[in-house]
Image (cartoon, rainbow, N blue to C red; front, top):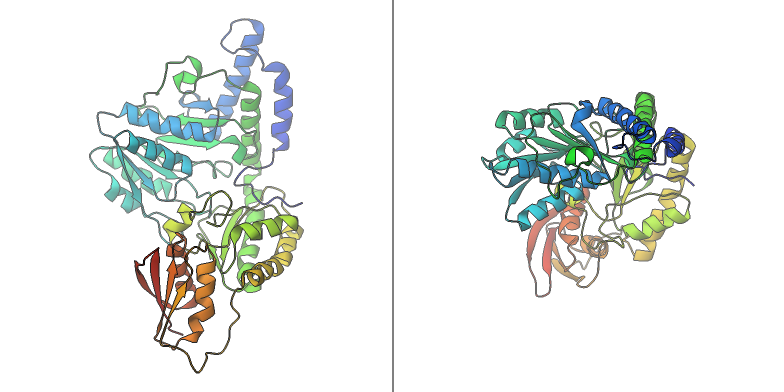
Length: 460
């Protein structure tokens, strides 16, 4: 059964498994103790730190291990803000950061601080100069992911780091998605990552804080990991994480070229095989293994279940999932279609046969979902077409508002309008995105009695 969700968690690398099993017998003792077992455990921990630091591109004494990537992000944000509290309580971050960064920003705001979100373009990339405009005299920290977790777009970290350095503001890089493919370039100040993203075991994150960065760990003082990650170190898992990071880096160049070719195949084929599909993210500056596309008139959760039954494990940033009824903040910030979203992130070893199998079943599954939802079939305009039309979809969730719009748009003359009434948050994003895809004019949004009224003018 092909697993295409490595961006969530990559399968355990064989080297990680071997290192984990071996270190269970050698790394169980307290590395802070002076007896033989403790010294042996300390040697394993030190070796793992040196290996990870070499991959990150920092000094070993600048890197600590944390219980997860999320904990690394939270510790980085809290420590940097505390260390620079005399500067201020303002945070700058991109609008497409991982939820761990957004949660840290929300916590700062709840404590009386503030943050500014830097917008992205339709491909999901920031403009480095926009960070310069977002920085203020009271900005204590800036955050920018190295590559986006939903669409794969690689961010201009080096350029942004230069702008932040000139302003005297440290830059935290969330490198969870990219570290397995190579080091993060530029003069970043702090870096966080998570081992299970590159094939290491879950429960190991890393945090690098360069010398010279003002950093004050929050919480009770602890003697472990330079006081930046409290608690007994999970040495077997840490050893496995470092060993697998070194292994995937050794394989990265060849595997990236192979997976990039498979992703290029998917990007080119999806739009040909399935009508009304938008492939999102930067087609060039992107992670080699990740591709995301959105299908009009499709319930994302239903499509994922159908793909699962067909033997393919994929993910989604669609608002139509069981976990949330709000659109993906990444897709929302990009201004692209959110409904029917599918994310494929290929693990190492994915074959062309597996990709072709996916492409073989996708068109039929999408067509089946659209048919069950009553998606429109193009038809000739009626001679009795009305000059304007109101479609009531109140109380109905995506993708129904867009489906109903598409059903009736050809029933009004060119130049006339259709007004869609909807109380679904996703409609605010999906109706303009549909207009851009189908070359219709999105006139705008206005208030309605129980929701919003979205006006679309027929152009073609």
